[in-house]
Amino acid sequence: MEAQLSKYLSERLNCDNAVAIRNLSRIPGGASRETWMFDASWTEDGAEQNAPFVVRKDPPASLVESDRVVEYAFYSAFQGTNVPVPAMRWLESDPEHLGAPFFIMDRISVGETNVRNISEPHYAEAKAMVGRRMFEVLGAIHSFDWRVSEIAGVVQAPAPEMAWSEQVDYWEEMIGRNEISPQPIARAAIRWLRKNPPPPAERIGVVHGDYRVGNFLYSHEGIHGVLDWEMAHLGDPIEDLAWAIHELWHRDLIPREECIDVYQQASGLKVDRDALHWWDVFNGVKAQGIWLTGAKSFNDGRSSELILAYAAYILINGTDEAILRSLGRGA
Amino acid sequence: MKPEPQRVLYAMAGALGMLTSEVGSAFGQQTSGLSAALSMVLAQEWDRAASRLVEENVAVSGLLERARTLITDELLHARINEVVDRIPATDLRVTALQAENDDLRRLLADVHAAVDGVEGHEPELLNRLIWDELRESTRRRHLVAVR
Image (cartoon, rainbow over all chains, first blue to last red; front, side):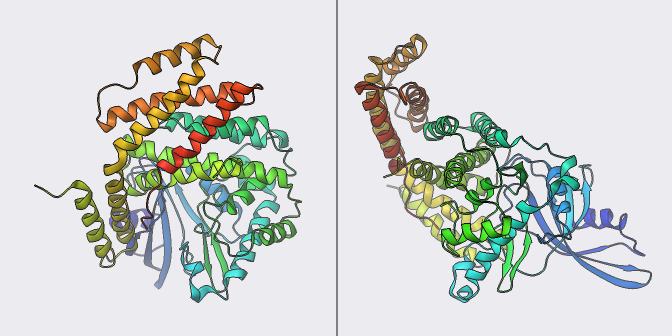
């Protein structure tokens, strides 16, 4: 892939010679797209230039079926705002260059995404600060005026009273399309969601769709970049808050109530507790839809990514248990 | 005599786990670690899959038997009769037991939808028993922590 990247960048950068590609390596995780990092160097008007990049390439199949153009637009919209994101460089739909469509962005060279390290002793002093920052950044995402950004051109905004039902419809259809075996617990949860709708969204805002520890770069200094916008959409911001504190991945950086307090101050939204509970149940269903989509891809042979099989074996049952607890039906 | 698959899979998991620290790239380490974790999962599944499926298929069949007298929807009633009369079959391969399990749980989900929220002693009892079975179904699928 080095030669292909060199050719692609040489045609797009103002360079005197061919771009040299070094340190190309695949980034672990990235279950929705193949993510690679590399360093590029070239000379421009006789001066040597170096830049670290990340390329996000469409896979044959993945955990989620997402739109590259939409993801690129959400990243681009937040560039230069108080929500830190890497700068976007090139969006390429022609599969000829790398074997699949892709986009290239700058690589933020500070911070890490490891979900476990934040709970290690060497982060003991910074953990609470990162936790508070996590919910301040989430509030900033939800306060963002998407109407005057690239986002308005690539996705439709739901009506406030329809934000919940559009999401339930989408994930119910996704589960129906991808379940290898019947999912009676998810089906029962979907019935409950439809019988007990939440109040209309107080605000239609950007919903990251997968905002949690693991999808932002953090260090002892704070949060340096929000990543993985492949499930971003417009909707009820409480969906994101409920996802960020969902029991499947909440890391207890700060207590749950403090998460909500920090979020309310940063977003200007008043969190309705019934709505929060509704979105908690919903997020169990959504998580199940994600694991089932990956499991089907693996089972059908469209992907041999082991993380998809792992998610199916480990996470589907754990998510069923989480759904039962959120419905008050747990052990 | 040959080593049982479970023993082989656990040994593979151990070997892959040891190799993980020797792999140079982060992606390689993740792949090796996932391979080890999946080997441990499969070792547990290999030994218990038939037992779990037979136990669950009996439990769900019992609930559907109870539903036969309650369900008035003709189509759903006919589906219950068809499945309960056909199961259990004599094929004990895990794939055959899983296919039966899929049929039974698909039907259970529909019966659950039919009785959920319906007032009366019998539908409320069946609803509660179905919730109990769903909770139990997650316990049957528990795996020993693998990572």
